[in-house]
Length: 117
Image (cartoon, rainbow, N blue to C red; front, top):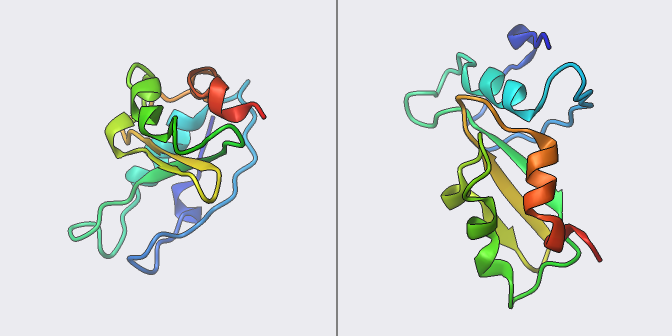
């Protein structure tokens, strides 16, 4: 999977949302995370570039939200401790490791109980 880092331009320190169409037969989330983290941003010394996957989680509630990090702890390419559950939004923000290796299928498997309605 070829990612053109020239197309990734950070112009501000605050998080920016980017939508990506992903063909997992050619690459996966880890490739995107690595490309983002390798970007030369004007503020990388202060705030390092990073990538987070937002997963809709209709099964997320107050009772299981604190178990999200545990569900992600063995998933390669994911920073489970920095991943966050947002109960009100019914979303899980999965922090991707800048070294790469994350696979969408592995994340979906780990979060299966949260993804189902």
